[in-house]
Length: 68
Image (tube, rainbow, N blue to C red; front, side, top):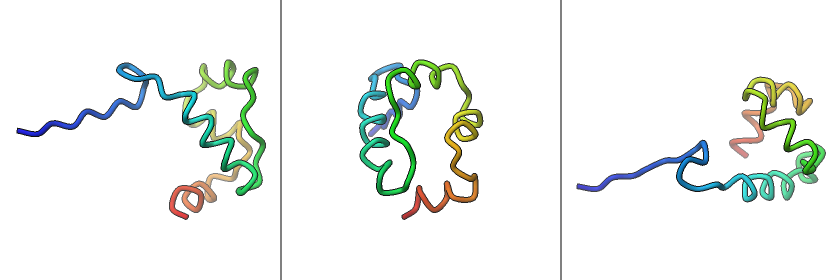
């Protein structure tokens, strides 16, 4: 039997630094501001919907960003 474990909340592995790095690498390409450490502390307390609203990226553009 094969089993796959997906850990999206950092319970098994904390990949936040990698995700922020990837987002910041792509920020210039997509025209949004990189995430700075002070912001990161604030963003950790927001829901996904609140983070999207905070980002200032229109919701209809998220599909474009994820599937390009």
